[in-house]
Image 1 (spheres, rainbow, N blue to C red):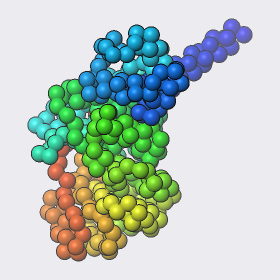
Image 2 (image 1 turned 90 degrees about the vertical axis):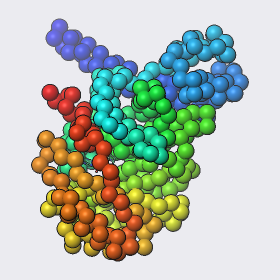
Image 3 (image 1 turned 30 degrees about the horizontal axis):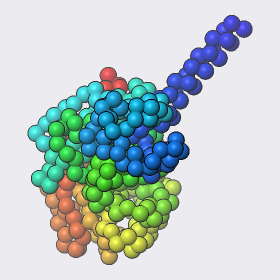
Image 4 (image 1 turned 120 degrees about the vertical axis):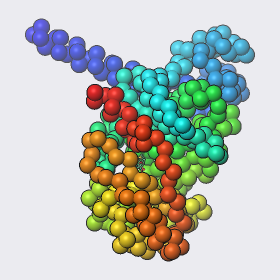
Length: 363
Ligand code: SAH
């Protein structure tokens, strides 16, 4: 009986702990309309939301006590209802033009972000989940499985902390870190609204890219999202036979269904889609693959981003040789496919999706 009591109590505390960790809203979860609604609900004027946004995203306060133009009682209510909480940076690795950040969340899970310094500005790659359920065979995050979705605030504050650490502004955002953004659709779209807002972080929608492994119903839904955000598809194979072997999602949504959705998306939005293609030695890098890929993508408003594979200790795939990558590139070019080879960032500092987190958690 006593035993039963302790086990039940333990279960109860775990439940409470998880709820605290994941569910309570904080101020960085609120898009501007939601915050305006909050103020109206507490009988305040809605312009206070814009005022507060400026404090949060332009002056970048770290405590509500820094706000000078909102009444004390309202500030106290905000502290209570919508605490101001961020993820915490626990490690930064720096290379010439890339910084890699490891963050700890409130429930002590870890995620990562990578900051790349381009000549056109600073671009950040953010995570959208802790782990990932898509199970891509070459991917470190897929190996670890999904633990939970990130909240909007956990994504927004990755940007705030990196900007602070960097001492300069982020101009581009790619949602290509740990996780599958379309498996956390609502929180990710809310994140986009907040970082794009003119009173928020003011990141132009054309400077925001969401990358998916190809969850087809979400591609259809995304067509109607009223922001000009870019779409990238992790393709990595020119046919179902190869793609089924390396990306389990293809068994649910095969290539032809995904391509059909992408064509619809591009017709509807007039936007060019990016196809990412990791070069895996002897798996998807043959000349036959290059030709097949050219045929598959013919006539689609797209470009292909060839990515040298970042090898990881726990997975046996190898990167293609440079001459193989060049030959592959040439065939696509010859077939009039827009193509670039991704400049490599951070292979020395475990920059591929999920590698730093694994190092920290599996030591
Ligand atoms: N789930 C989303 C976004 C996260 S992964 C997606 O699949 O697009 C971001 C990109 O990194 C994907 O294209 C993924 O296939 C790629 N990737 C994963 N592991 C990699 C590695 N070791 N080297 C290079 N790219 C990798």
